[in-house]
Image (cartoon, rainbow, N blue to C red; front, side, top):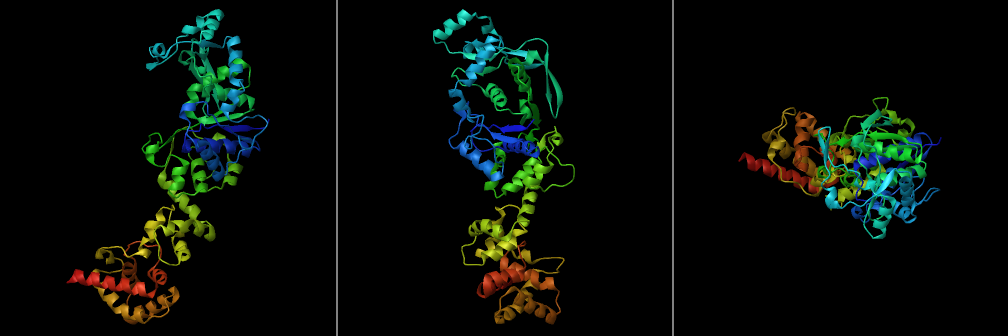
Length: 485
């Protein structure tokens, strides 16, 4: 049997990290076995739709490499792949009627006011459970109410006694009391199917063999199973993924600032690093390895290794992983992408390609670049305490002496290439009997105004050029002199 999985998002905005993981796992499960990955748009909740959200879904799947085999744009043998289009064909109403004919569903005419009064306590929890009030209506009464134009929904007819057991590939057999199974709505009063009904019908008609979703749907699975059994359909394999939490173990929300794929891209993360990281939110390989390309994930992905405990979104680890991807990037590709970020901080005509190479192994996200390189544009206001380095045995006093002594050497220097500058300074250090750091530390502080820089003093001086370098050293001498008088 060929494996067929689906990703069935609602077009309600940006793609949440949890939804991206669902798409990833569905894609990897299918591709690991040479199966098909289907994109289906579930837009039955018309009020929650966001304009442009379908485009976001398509862009995100394309950017992450999760290319579907069948989709609304690609078409396929079991389309249409948009639920609102399937509604117009009458398909859901047809299957709901089959359930009514079998006694597995019924029409409900209860008003919202009446429904709000229906609560009962089950296992110490207060829940809203429909009381089957309309189940007793005769066929004639139902037809009369419909003919009179009374609004109604179609509900699933679930038993109130006994238990229902379903199987999950990760959690095993799960048994629930039927008293907990509400008669969920299948068709709403506007004629649209609910998510719960439409996804069962569509999964069957599209031949879906493995259903991947978040474990918040575990409680609904018994109702899904009863629908499959009522129709006489084969139940797909269920794979319920663990919750994703923030580092304080709260559900990952928009307030975190990095709950969606687009949030992460805007913050300067690479798409392939996000894919790698999100795959590891709940799944682990059979080794300690952590860096995987999408193709490598396809080859080694075993969904039985998905865990059941909540997965923590470790932002620090994502930054580290992204940094590893950046270090491995082709220099040309790195420069093409980094150039825009460099220009956010540098407007002067400087060698941006060399600066790009300087930062490549020192940043973790693109957003790190402007702050890291802004000193090239203009010397920041800095405190002379930066000249203190215990290991180098430097102080503001020693720095003033060194900068004053080295200034004439650099004024006489014509070749401001990195190699020539280093050779000249090396000779100066030898002549004076100094240690390297005793000279290079204060020189780097003077030309950058930063304690941490993406390159050493002579590399920075080469980028700045002679005139700017000397101006900054003179500024350093002035600052230090002012402090000491």
